[in-house]
Amino acid sequence: MSFFKKLKDKVSKQTDQVTDKFKDGLTKTRDSFTSKVNDLVAKYRKVDEEFFEELEEILISADVGVETVMKLIEELEMEVKRRNIQDTEEVKEVISEKLVEIYYGDDEESVEALNLQKDGLSVILIVGVNGVGKTTTIGKLAHQFKQDGQSVVLAAGDTFRAGAINQLDVWGERAGVDVIKHSEGSDPAAVIYDGIQAAKSRGADVLLCDTAGRLQNKVNLMKELTKVRKVIEREIPEAPHETLLVLDATTGQNALSQAKTFKEATDVSGIVLTKLDGTARGGIVLAIRNEMNIPVKYVGLGEQITDLQPFNAHQFVYGLFGDLMNRTEQE
Image (cartoon, rainbow, N blue to C red; front, side):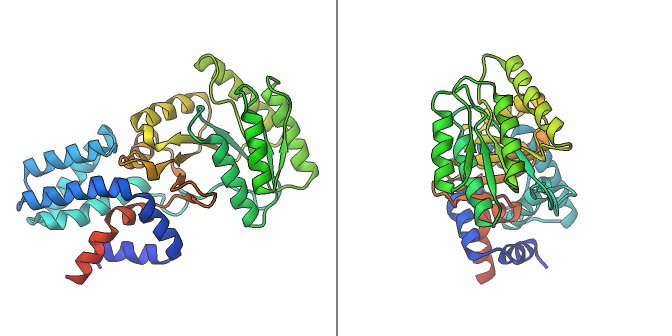
C-alpha cells in the first residue's frame, strides 16, 4: 500500500470537520510550499543533485529549519536510492512520508496526548512571551475541556502585564469557568497557590495557570517560573502535569529561539502553536519537534473559539498534500 493511501486511511478516522480545519488552516503554507514543490517537479524530469539542492531551499523557506532540512534531505536521498526512484513525481510521496517519520520518530501513539489525570486535579502551566496569544489559548482550552464535560478553574498568574487579569476574566466568562485572581502586581506564586486550593475545594478536573510573559531579563523569568513550579509541586506532587509553551507561528525562527529560552527556564512538555493559518511558514512545526524534541500539542487554525485543534502530524501532512493525493488517485 502506498504511503498516500495509508495517510488517507489515517486521516479518514478523524472527522471531516477536523480534516477541513487543517486543510483550510494550512492554505498559506500549502499554496507556498506545495506549489514550489510542484514547480520543482515540473522543472526536473530526473532526480539528481541539483533537484535536491533546490528542494533544500524550498524547505528552508518554509521554516522547516536548517538542521531538520539537512536530516530530511539525507533521508530522502537514501530512500530515493533504495527504491531506485528516477521520476521526480514519485518524490512527492516520499517527502510526505519522511515529514511524518521525522515528526513522530518512534513515539507515534503518545506524542500528542495531554498528560491528564484520570483521578484528581490536572494542573497545566501555560508559558510564553506577551503577544503570542497565551491568554486566548487558555480561554480556548478552557472551553474545550468544558465541552468535554470537565470542570475547569483558571489562575491569573500573569500579574505583571497591564490588563492581563481582566483579559483572562473575559475569557473565563466566555468559557463559563471560574477565574482565581489577585490585584495587579501581586505575587504570581500566591495566585497559583490560591488557584490550586480553589480547584481542590471545588473538585475541579483541570487547573489552567497563566504566567508572566516577559520580565526584565531571562534570569528573572527563570526565577519566577521556578518559584511558581515549586508551589505547584509542593501542593500536588508530580504536578504540573503539562507545561505548555505558546508560540506564534508567524514569527518563524524567532519562535524557535523563544522555545530554546523557555526550555532553559522551565521543563516545557509541549507547544501550542498559534496563528498557523496566518503564515506560509508552517514548517516551523517540524523544526520545533526535531530540533527541540518538544511535541506540538495544539495548533491555532483560525480566530473562532473552536479553532484551536489538537495537533496531528498525519492531518498536517494531509493538509499540505491532500489535493495532490486526490489527484494521484484519480489518474
